[in-house]
Length: 167
Ligand SMILES: [Zn+2]
Ligand SMILES: [Zn+2]
Image (cartoon, rainbow, N blue to C red; front, top):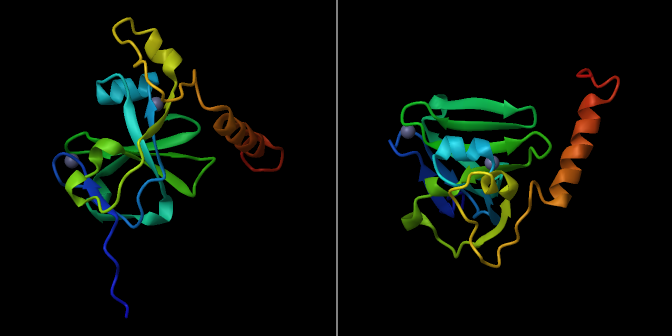
């Protein structure tokens, strides 16, 4: 049998031009309160689900996925037609891709999704003056969680190493 199994969920942008399927559900959700996420969403934070990169298939509109980089360590995409933010991928972690939770079509979800498990870059929203962080049990980090910061630091060393071609 070569029948392809049903995707765990599907998603896309607001105008419907960009669509994707995910072969497996995200293993975690993160709220990012950094200034870039606030500017792009117009809201206190953006929520991302982390998927294996190989699990995501762009089913339409891949060419109108506009890529942007606001830092040297990650690349984001959005729909060039409606502006919906779609993904973010860290260069230190090419095997995973973060997809905006709001782009998921909830009526297609086949499994129980995990709840948001961390709030990151909360120090940036605390400066806003107009938003109080929720008093909940979700762990809150000033910037990246220490384990991910280590990963970024290790990646940076590799990129900047003599002979790597980038230094
Ligand atoms: Zn769109
Ligand atoms: Zn952010």
